[in-house]
Length: 213
Image 1: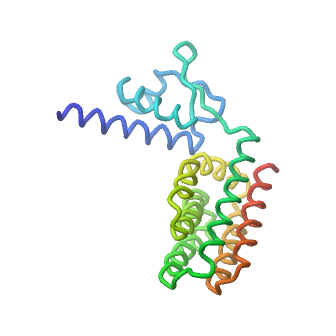
Image 2: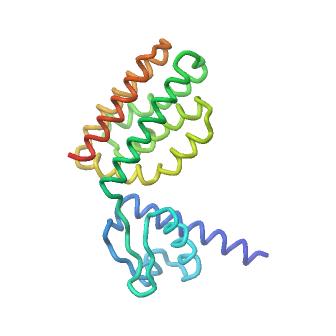
Image 3: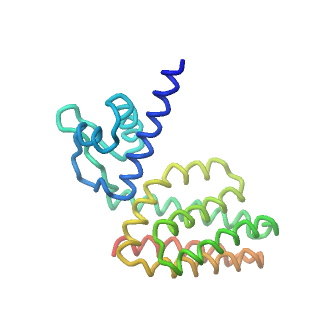
């Protein structure tokens, strides 16, 4: 029983460590990794690493080949475009659902996120900003209360995080622009204005266009 529990824990640790390296692009897209590389990097045995790779392959991060090794996948331009178009549809719908009825407590929760975001954007802390940025969008989805929409956004979150980090690192000053856009959305929500829908659409469309520059 204890061995089974330990294997489960090692499997989770291996998964989290490999995914962190993928998100940070320490393992860059297009890289071919060997099993030995992963064993040496993670200081773990084969078994938990293989279990972690099965999960990561199912999520689309890697392609595992018994002959070639582990290929780090990248998102194609078409897939990025499709994901962002889906986000625009879902997240503007979320704003449409909440702008007229968002509560004071819910607004306070979102402002707490933006207070933290302001601090990290001033420091140009790209990694922390990306995490808070995704938290802001997910919080709005949770307030809207449609579990299926939130589940879809969560499914794409890690892929979007990798893309966001990549592009913000090219120009960290973009975090300040994105922060100001979040503030504008919040002010519209606070006034229960339909304008929040347009601002969310514009924010995501501009974010998408920056990715293709």
